[in-house]
Length: 555
Image (cartoon, rainbow, N blue to C red):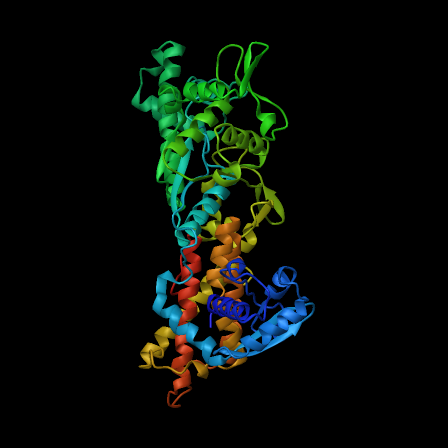
């Protein structure tokens, strides 16, 4: 019995109790699903729910009295072995071994689809992440969003949502002018201008452009600067795309900021705000009344010199996304972008949207590399910043993605190279991948012995050992974990779940003999346990796939 099946059984019992008059509630007010969780203390049962506490006030009954009504009725449900009341009204539920064991067959039959659901079906989500300026290699902070953003896209798709991964390409503005000026200085052998971009990569790009345009230095500086801006951005952008691709991160849409200016989208957005009475003029500039929507101060959207500010570009870009039919706009921003949250929300509200429904801004914290107990501060190529390539070179793609997705984005993290490069159990990604490889090895060995996992006619009650029960309960958690990771935008839940599952499997394998010894004849229990091994392998592979991490068969 899966948590979903148990939830459905509880809902059915609630509905019957209401119809019988045993619970004084309107049937229409009953929940469509009930949360069931694994108790922290194994002795408390297989699952627990607080539904009696949630409904007691509305039912006009003490929680324990309502729990007693549910206890009596749940005890008669097929597959439930016992129900106990704990504390103020919690229900601790044990399921029969046979009802639990059938999950192994269900997982194997579902295959790649196990863990997926349709909770997000019908939603079109624009997921914007990384969006690093094309003025240098992808930094470690942006690499975190690459790993987390791609994993979040996979998780959202696993709930049935239609997700478009989008990279916003900042190819206009002052930073591009500074980039071009820095390239010109590099090409001319001059020092980097104040506020410019330094690093060996700048000289590499300048030399590559000079190789294609040997006449560049004969041009007037203004003309040379135009060439360097265009060529430099194009080369830097191609390098960024290739670096992300090698990390396993590709985008459906690469959106150019420059097009918003060229098509008049920025001016149209400003006019829409003006027409809606959301702007005013002061000191020669045009201001957005963003304080009316929760911002801490009003924002300038057109400077006194007539040039639009960046928030006007944000306005145009938001409108463009909504015009493309996305009902949810999710934007991942760096740690220094907290001030953007309220102004973005003000824009959405100013355009008539409910920002709680259409807009979501996620802020990620910083990442540091550590080796020998000390921070790694210098990149071989980029100078003062650590890049995506530096991390991948140090630990590999799988470890890089897993390490960056393993922690809540709300917290800063240190990636200890001494740990993430070890082939030992204290390396989290190795620990999970090794479990998958071990499962694959067991199935290969079984095949060599002429043994196969149990078929459709296996007796699920055979899987009655305590460690088998632990593993089955852990396997049953994946759908709930996927749903929570999608709803809360917390992909680290997937990684932590996989580590717990790997640990639970290793404990099972240490105590439960899967393959017969020597000349011992195979028994139905061996086939049943092989099915459990196969189900565990499917679950680990599906979880790793959500993180964009490989599931090796051999290590």
